[in-house]
Structure formats: C-alpha cells, structure tokens
Amino acid sequence: MKRINPNIKPFEKKVWLSSPTMHGPELEYMSQAFHTNWMSTVGENINKIEHLIAEKIGCKYAVALATGTAALHLALKLTGIKPGDRVFCSDLTFNATVNPVKYEGGEVVFIDTEYETWNMDPVALEKAFQLYPDVKVVVVAHLYGTPAKIDEIRVVCNKHNAVIVEDAAESLGATYKGKETGSFGKYNCISFNGNKIITGSSGGMLLTDDLAAANKARKLSTQARDRAPWYQHEELGYNYRMSNVIAGVVRGQFSYLEDHISNKRRIYERYKTGFKGLPLLMNPWDELNSVPNYWLSCLIIDPNAMCKHARSENKAVFVPEHGKSCPTEILEAIAEYNAEGRPIWKPMHMQPIYRMNAFVTREGNGRGLSDAYITGGLMNEDEMSIDVGADIFDRGLCLPSDNKMTAEEQDKIIEIVRSCFK
Image (tube, rainbow, N blue to C red; front, side):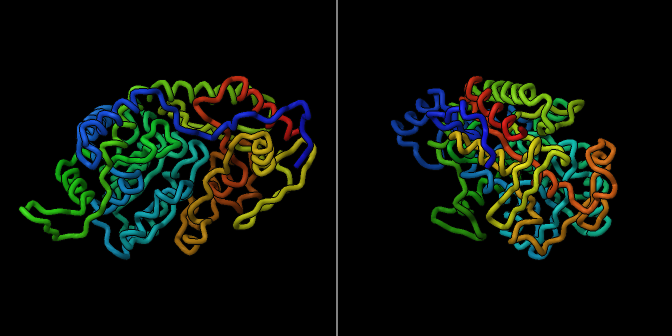
C-alpha cells in the first residue's frame, strides 16, 4: 500500500459500511411480544408492519417473511416458472436476486448493466428477448438504493408479455416518478437485513396487488398447511414466515425511515463535495425521474486514473502509481484506519457458479459497451472489449455509509481516499 499522511490516526471505534441504527421503540415492541407470549409467526407486530409497508409502498397486500430471499423465492414460485424455464435477471447485484430461480430449477439469463443508474439495461433486455423470445419472467434489482429505468423496462416486458419481479431489497423509500420502488412489478420484494435502510436484524416482505397471490404466499410460508382439523399438506411448503419478535423491530424502525434516508443523503452529498477535483464519480441516478434512498455511497474511478491492478477469484493486487489509484488500494487504506468499505457487487455472470449461464449486453454478444459511456467521453470506441457490469466492478467501490458516522469521521475517510491519489 502507498504511504499516506502519517498525521491521520486510526479510528478508535470502527466506522462501518452500514450497521443497524436502533432508537428505542424497537425494544418496546419486542418486549410487547415477549410479555404477551406472541413470540412466533402470528401477532400484532406482524399485522401492523404488513399494513404500514403496504400503505407506504402503495401495494394492496404485504406478506411478512423471514428474509428478503424468502420473499424472492415465493415471488418466483408465484410466477409459475418450471424447471428448465429461462428467467432474465439483473447482472450487477447480490446473488440473492438470482438464486431463487435456481431453487425452482430455472435457468438464469443475465442482462448487462447501464452506466446511468448501474441497473439493468433496457436496451440489453430487448436484445435478450430477441435471443430468447419464450422468457416470461424478468427479475429487476435496484442497486444500492437507486431505482432502475423501470418505465423503459416495463415497456419491453409488456411488449413481450413478461412478468416483472421487482427486487427492491436495497431501495425501500426510493421513488421513481413519484412512486415507491417495490410497487412496479406483479410481485415485489424488500429486505430488512441488518445493514438495510431500516432493519429487523433479518426479515423481508413480499408485496402484490393480487389477493390470491398474497394468500398463496402466506400459505406457502407456513409449510403449506391446508384448512383441516389436523395437519394436512397437499403441496410443498416452507418455514418462511416472519416472527412477531422480528416484526417488532421492523415496526419500531419504520417511523425512522425518512430520517435514515435524509442522513444517508447528507453522507452522499458530503462525499461528493469532499471528492471534488479527484478523477472519480459518485454512483449516479436518473435525476429527472428518480430519487434514491442513498443506502450506500459508492464511487467509480476514471479509467485514466486507474493504477495497474489485478484480481483472481479471491485475491487482489495493485502497483502504486503517482496520481492514480484503484479500488483495492482505497479499500486497504480505509481498512488500515479501522473503517469498512467493500467492493462493488461482482457481476453474476462472473461468479464461478454462474459462469456458464447466458449473458446478454446491448450488443447481444456478452461483451458490449454502453453508448452513454462512449459519448460521455470516458472511453473510446477502440476499448469496447469490456462489459458494463464488469467495468463498474473493476473501477468501483462502496464507501463507509453508516448512519452513525460523524461528519468528522467522514472527513477523515475523504482525506484517506484523497491520499491514495497523491
């Protein structure tokens, strides 16, 4: 690692990427569940949080589940996919977005990313339908709390009679054209994992306007027990229902959602101001149509300011260069001073488990390049041998974005990052 300013002292208390921020009401609702003995998968907290989330997002029905992944799995089951069916999925995402397709025996086809939001490229999606016209399900994720180009994606899906499953695990509270993410698909999913914008320590939610689908999800989430005086089961079920205790934590967090978003926005803007003059950009969004929840502040380094670096499956190395840096150097520097950053999600088509799956870019060959990136002056046409998601992974990283990070702590993070380019 480069030598950086010796006057920078390590943080005494670790600065996290995004840790839970508790306020007090969470414990009250948990205690209520405890003292009334409603500790399992029924109770007032579950009923209340389902109502609050459905009302907030604008869907008629919400089903509280143990995890966001469980919500995605049940959403995929509700679409009716069968073993061998192809499903289009966002490529630049966490593997929980796509694994439920495999749970049902489906075949994932990954859709490349666009640079304007770091989400699914609608042009690549249309190309994918030209290659695989039989596909009827599209799973769209909103990366790091930034809404995808959902209208353009819906136009493509409607043209091909495909159902959207919306993975809004990271984007609770973000809006697109004034509507909440998690309301655009036939089935929509959010997460209350420990690092999310609000948390239950775990937990997730499936949202839909289809009453029959909501009832089906509730049944499947409780081992698919039939209405009978005894335990009777005619189909395969799952132990996926949220507990009343976890729901109490989510219920206590809910009223602080907008406060968390406001604080995350301040963190993002402070980074943006602090990095002025450096050869990098913050994670973007469609400012005309959307408002992110700023869950994680990320950056991407200009290609001309990248030092020599390489990654294997589980290691990364770099060669320090004056005036240049790379994600590995910055992350190592941040870690040395007792703070947590992370790489951008490694694209799914690059993962060993999915390396043989189809991957479609806007050029259709798995190695295309976004026109916006060329016209933006960041890369010339002679360098069109990379795909967009892989390029963002190569040059990007997630910065410490914890709600409890002080301005002084963030100023030190900014100073550490700036030192890496000296």
